[in-house]
Image 1 (tube, rainbow over the protein chains, first blue to last red):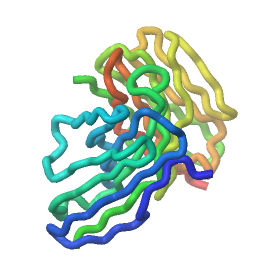
Image 2 (image 1 turned 180 degrees about the horizontal axis):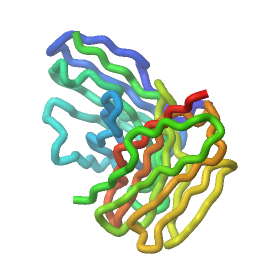
Image 3 (image 1 turned 180 degrees about the vertical axis):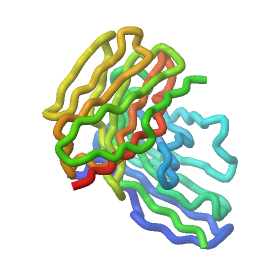
Length: 115
Length: 110
């Protein structure tokens, strides 16, 4: 059974047109993360939620926003996608943040194309 | 801030041979994790090391955590084509978030 689900798997948008990516989990984990991964690079953390507490990375552009309406769902909103935002977006969850219980379970990712 | 470096960035290995990839942190870690990402896939958790000098094995994969808890290694014996992918180490310093290394991309020559 899928534990971390991302929709859609592939998303094509136009330059400047807002887009929302979705992530859901069946693990009941406290923490949900959004990563951006470009080709041949490591995942880059954008932000994470510990329960309802939002934690933004210092270098995450304002163009990227997130919502977590409940434990199971988390959304990534890109308000005005640029060509440089084309990437794989990975959602991950963990039981806790920091420490041995921070092993992360990744979803399959959404590949975003910006035209 | 905390930095995690991996070497080599690319590893070309003949099928059947052994190789080792290394992970080094700028700070002492409370634990280190290893993930594997197949081409076109997503990172999958492999293992976590917590104790100084800890060694864990998974079939042909041997993971080691350094005595100073600032470095780690992954050794693969008798490499198979199924080992193709990128191996990421990721470390946690006390109280901080998980920081990924740049990854070692493994290519296997049949």
